[in-house]
Picture: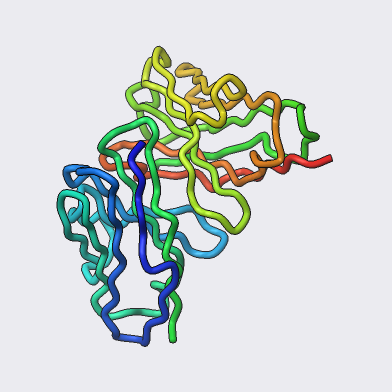
Length: 108
Length: 117
């Protein structure tokens, strides 16, 4: 099974600050990497797929990059509504689909 | 508008069974694979099971193989998860999700399953 190592576990950012979250796969996942945002008490929402494609309706301050085993999600200009938990997902070799352990993002 | 609505959750004793449903609308259900994903309280997301559009192929995570059965009724646009021999570690919110254009791009609101005596 492919393991996804996500960092950091938590992050505190000021309004307008740029933040980055990383995911490392245990083997090459050929950009089959998605990012999700989960707000408190809500279902996860897709932000980015295929490493860097922005899902419809997602603000352009969210961006994804990476290849091989290393991927990152960047939020350019933290907003209050960006608070939540962020997860990566590998969809290269399945089953099983595997998620990262999550990054809790809060406003400082 | 795509909608996925789960039902059937609740409190159940260890070793007993429960069947979850997910009613789908807003897309041609029979054309898409469907998935169950769960989240234990205060924990992360965990893929549970998947089923092909026809229902002919099913996939499970190791910890639920032989205990859970994913199925679908394309005439009713409904996905199911039959959960047998439930354990305390199965306690979680269960989400159904699909892949219409991108990985897990649509999710239901989730249904809580609590396994406790």
